[in-house]
Image (cartoon, rainbow, N blue to C red):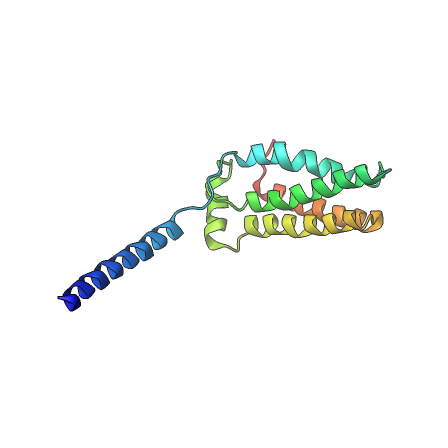
Length: 157
């Protein structure tokens, strides 16, 4: 009788573990992020205002730690914006092109979004070191990346 109860217990325990495993697989396949804003909204609400702060570093040098903190925060936000732009499903003028690039994982959209993250992270570190000269060089690189991306994906006016 003890053996039968033990076998039933082991069967129930095994089925429970199998259920957990299957639930984990199903959750892993579910999207982890749910985009809310469109590409245009991310650009206008996140990228543009924060890039303005970072780009003005040479024309309006920071005077104190508060100014440097603002530049650091804006550079960090730009870096994270690159990650936001990698989330599939955002409505955009060139949505099919962007989604195709995201599925491939190595298209131009992915390349430019990742470059924004990498260069903005460098800008964050330069701002943390209070290095205006390095920031000036990095902002030129960020601007070139943005212009190249816009040439491919920004709607023609």
